[in-house]
Length: 273
Image (tube, rainbow, N blue to C red; front, side, top):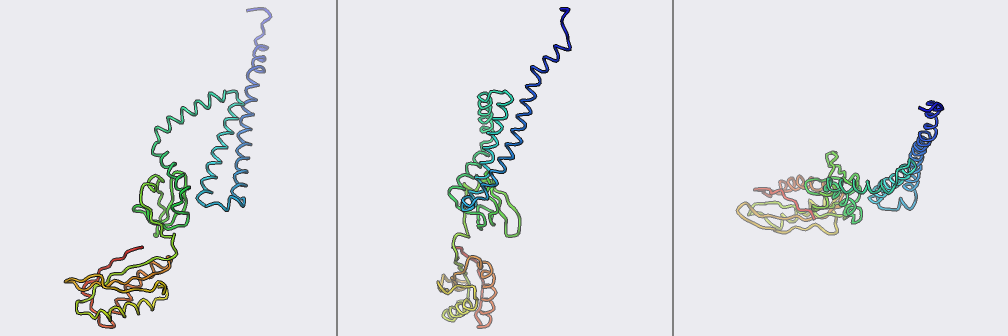
């Protein structure tokens, strides 16, 4: 070992020439991350409260806010990594390779995301709509990139993958302001059809939630050994559908009893249009 070799001096030179600059880079990267994320949250918050943003469809609002936040944070991370000294080209290449591997492993998940984008663009339903999709019925609570949250009539939250929604028939019960209800009632073969018609129309007229335009209709829908099937067709506002649906069965039974109309067998059936 040379006589003029000084271990302490060499160590100090190494620290000041190699370690300290690297530590400053790390500190700078951490500051970029901290400040960058705060700026992103501020910008996204300002955007989501802007007048132009509020005019957008609620589906697009949620989607756009999440995507914008993710993209901006990825850019900040790339800048922070470049400050540390890692080549961004190598980083992007690595991210691309990892992304391809993840894409192969999560094909189902990516299909859900793609389906979420389709739902956002095609708008088969909106937040607040009452829909039936497969075996799930309820009010749409939230539409995300991956899942759609639906609140059922008995107040349960059901999370449905967007891929499932895009591959099934969706009935949107909130699109139209009015809905039609068809009731089928069986009466005895010897019943006076004209009397049955008048009783059904009078019963419908007594329910203030039933619309007069289009007017209720009564027609014979069939007959057999069990009796005559009489169909009552009426229109209601969408929000009054279920109250009218349940009330009419009770009201018709009471009216038939009052006028001596016999019900040999009541076929409870309803058709939604």
